[in-house]
Amino acid sequence: MRFDTKKTTKTPKNVSPFFFAGTWQYHDPNTNREHELEILPNYDVYLDGKLLKTVVERLDDYRITFIDRFGYHLIIKANDYRPISVYDEANNETYAIINSKKEE
Image 1 (cartoon, rainbow, N blue to C red):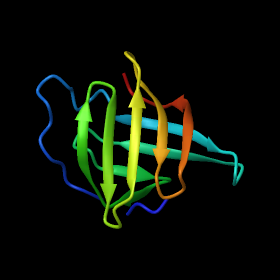
Image 2 (cartoon, helix red, strand yellow; image 1 turned 180 degrees about the vertical axis):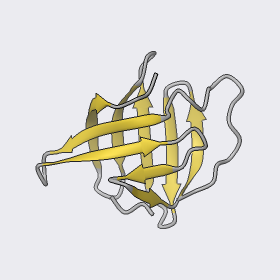
Image 3 (spheres, one colour; image 1 turned 90 degrees about the horizontal axis):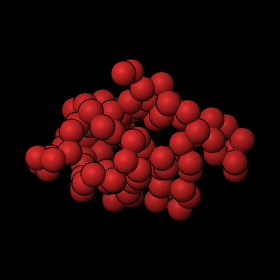
């Protein structure tokens, strides 16, 4: 992923900043590596411990879209309970979230 931190646009009133917040893991089959994606309640994003330079482009109940300084999107999709996938436009890949370290 080519994301490097961000500050956010407005949050819709019905979406809690804590819904997408957490530490999420996914597996990249192309590199056979697991990655850790952390989203903070202020929408700072860390990939494998590195702060990414992104801004929130869109946020609703089932999706948060970040855009990086190069114009690539990082889209986190969710179901009614938690985030379930990560789309990385820079790699044109969608990864299933396989584990969560979300603090309750």
